[in-house]
Image (cartoon, rainbow, N blue to C red):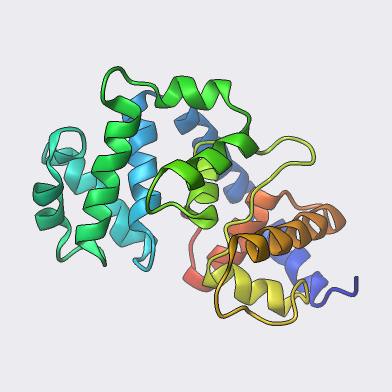
Length: 218
């Protein structure tokens, strides 16, 4: 496939490689942490739908500081989120449902992640948890260091990434909406692109994201 603007991409990767690889190491460290850390990352990915990453991260930190992430009701969480994230009522309900799903009896999120192959884990998250589509589930698994083996990798197809995929001629147009089938088709193109340019998928996402936001975050 005839990609475009590859010298620019390779220059960006060379310039940011050390910082991005440190960030990916931090994600892997989170993935080895306690259930509380993992659930906080899941909350972040739920909140980040149509809300900036920084605002979403601050919202999670606020829930933790106020004792709401683990014990707050959906109503209490929604009140806290009202001025912090979009669709606060829905996201509060999704968060409590996810908490009940994994922690109603005993903490199971870390054990489940450790025992479930990443692709199967993503399918399960999309199928079983409201508020998580392929983008959000992929974001969560990347942020806890899952799915980075040879031949693996998930694409986080937000507007920043889609814009850059079009810029590099990986896709011709940015779709108005992403069905599950369309998401997986584009993800497969990203996987091939990642292999061809020799930049890991998780790193490629951060290169694109930092171009648009000015920082390597998550």
